[in-house]
Image (cartoon, rainbow, N blue to C red):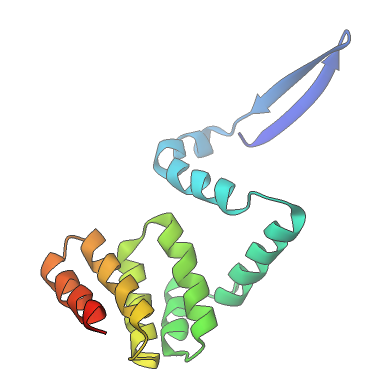
Length: 141
């Protein structure tokens, strides 16, 4: 819905939804992302503010996504990279999870949690042999 209005007619409140046809054309393709962001920003005002602050910290709104990701992968800021990982993991983008976890493992190679998350990202992409090897490394610790 591109605009939602509640109007009162003869004492009855009605909901009117207006849709832009160009947006409706992409509804099926983008509904997964809509569902994610709807739940991602669910909660009270403070919860929403915290999520927006995290997104603004992760991504420069003036940069294209490719550039933002390249800059993030050069960073040693674990909180920044983990914040982005958290976002893409909730969206189900396992390839980006893999890339971000690889960077986290480069920053802190002894962190078993990062290795375990990398193994899960590999597993979710069907890269079972790589995932199993990492899971075994984690279990040996």
